[in-house]
Image (tube, rainbow, N blue to C red; front, side, top):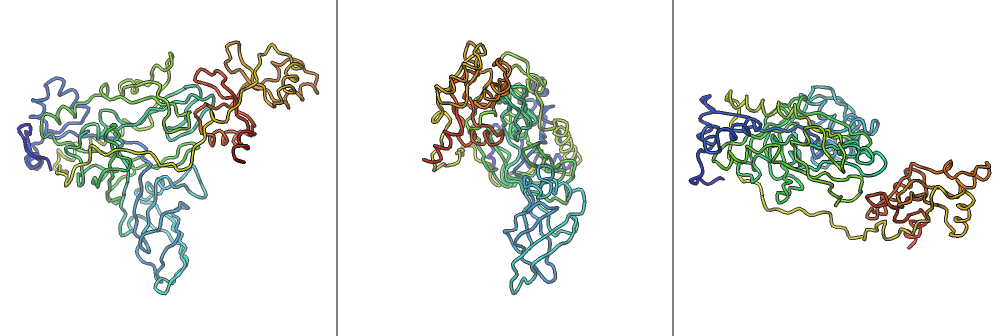
Length: 502
């Protein structure tokens, strides 16, 4: 509950009475920026009753509880699939939870739980297959049927983590394209991706959770939903708050619930979320006037396979929305993984509902924590990093003859020679097999046999990630380089094998 103080200018009851009479003044968060700039916080807090927010992005921590009713004879489902996407059965006999990121067993990386939810809301027929072990009271051991959303007793969207307050922008410093939950990231910092609606983002407009908490009524997926608690990984200390939400899928629209697949990463669900912020005081007027220039995030190198990836620079949402930013001294293209157009539609739709007296604001039963901390996973087994097992690289330049490279291989007892420029930056690599083949074919120019597309590692990469890189590309060594591509050493399959043997 929010205690009334001298700074309070309105109550929930007063605002709802104005909504009921059709007298409430409702604006979107984008409109509030201009209003406070022109009129000031005090006047805005007196004149504006509600500010609406909106976001529409990939929210992987989403899913739905479904109840099918009992079959005859009844079944206690042990395993079940919806359109070939496995759902979690560990509830009652004919309840399940379908998660957005679970992928189809027949169409992986193309169709998943998020698509099942969208298809349900669209009214499409869903195929259910189930298996069971059979009991005296649930004798049936298999089931196959089809259903649509109207056939279900309950269809409840229940998302453990949505409406992320802050999200890093992503780029990739490796010399190959990578595929992540931040989309396709081009090699050598070739692009930047980001998510979030900036000044429309719900949690940025009430970062201290004065009005957001358990029971807060919200726009969810095109229908009415509720905040049911803090989201998983809620991290308000670092401006990374999240909320847990639920709502009736039968009221929702496929316009605001969209299944999606990220190339070579997996499936997810795009969710429309909008939270009304009642303007109870001047402080809330100030907070809801936050602009894109006021909101910043870090550009993180996702090419580094570690939790604490390096930050390359800080950037505002005002810059991100221009679709170009400066990075490492050059202009880089920026793209959004979320839809600003749909986020605006969420905020506008919620505004219309309130103006028409169809949606009222409510005081939360309990506001969300502003002090809870966030901890990474506890690791009980030591992590080995590349720097701990890399060995010195034997290097040379392109001026060296193939004959001399062959002598190096024999003298140093190695299978890989790293080719560098005069400043020790990586240029390529040759193997003992490359040299043998060149001699057999009477070739004598090193330039002709260099492998120029070289897969590399960084010193702080986990050895597991390096081993996966070797396996993926069917190679036996990775030069280890720094941020400026200077060669620091090399890691080979032999070092990894020795580590595993220990």
